[in-house]
Length: 91
Image 1 (tube, rainbow, N blue to C red):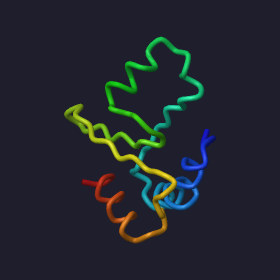
Image 2 (image 1 turned 30 degrees about the vertical axis):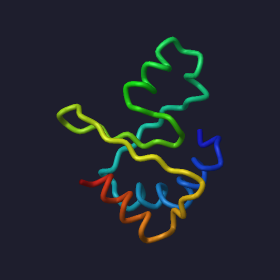
Image 3 (image 1 turned 90 degrees about the vertical axis):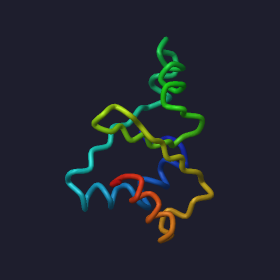
Image 4 (image 1 turned 45 degrees about the vertical axis):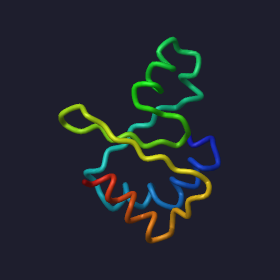
């Protein structure tokens, strides 16, 4: 879990706090290292348009989905980033 630098950074600087403060926020991890050799791996990446990690996929009650990609260039403590990401998570 959290084996890439950007995943670690996102968790340490933003997600850990967000999950702690919001008990209703449920996040499941798709560990790409673990699933890489599975025959369905590419289908899952294609289905959710995952081209980089981490990508957060929000699946809505109607089974539609939206994605949010993070990069090492993001300043996860920056208010602008946090506002965009919270808007993604909660709207």
